[in-house]
Length: 349
Image (cartoon, rainbow, N blue to C red; front, side):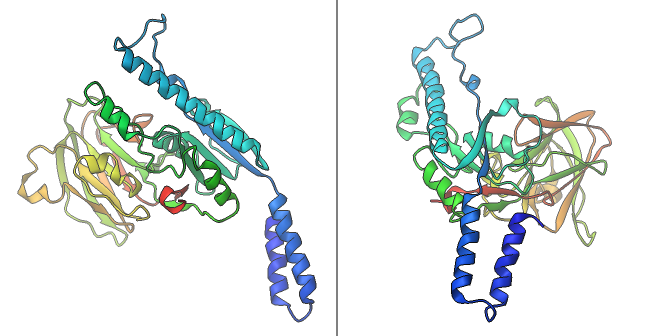
């Protein structure tokens, strides 16, 4: 029996036999068990946004930007991100933790044998980490460079200085140690967030989406042709919807405040198990189908779609993870994917 299970079994045995053990013995034994659990070193993976996303020069050392203010702004973002990594690493060096860093572009295999993954970057870095995680390992996001309102205002006439919202990131460098300690001491628990499961031609894809998926033709100027219907666990279906549009987006509750909300969708409670879908820019949907262009997929329902364009892709949480589809393929979408444990900001503050 594993050590942790044996330890709990001993605790339960003590609780079940109070008449056979003295209170002093019980107290000493339980204190010893707690101390052993505290002494067990946690294993942590530091999942890092790389520095090369802040490139300010081309391969020939020529600046990519002619405006010096943009040049200095981008270079400063790199410096802030690098400093955030250094601060978090110094904090980890002071903790009884075994940890190692890895840049997100250098990871290609699923993450195993760690107690926690800490991402340093923004929401995109946490989303990328989620594709390497099952439902057993929690993730804690650190927003390395939050948007500063004064900078957005300062540069508003030249460029957009908005950065990651950090919607899924529980910490910044200012409170990382506090949030980390809260997690390690059991005062902060991760939340279970829904992810999207996708099957193509009855074969489950290995990826699942924490934010959303987009099913579309690879050329944005080409019409996507598909149909879909919502089916319940009892096999009862809503009417079939035939579409010509620029694609189909399905989001989780966590992703409902991202592209879905920008396109006119609605924000969902983050712990909801439901999904939300929207047909992008439908062409002549007609009065009968207009109400079905946007809606929900309940936790006990799934969406069955059929793809009729010559080619297409299913994009998971942006453009980095995608799978090709072709005319005649059938696609099933549901919220039955393994959940992801995420330490959320509003529950850790």
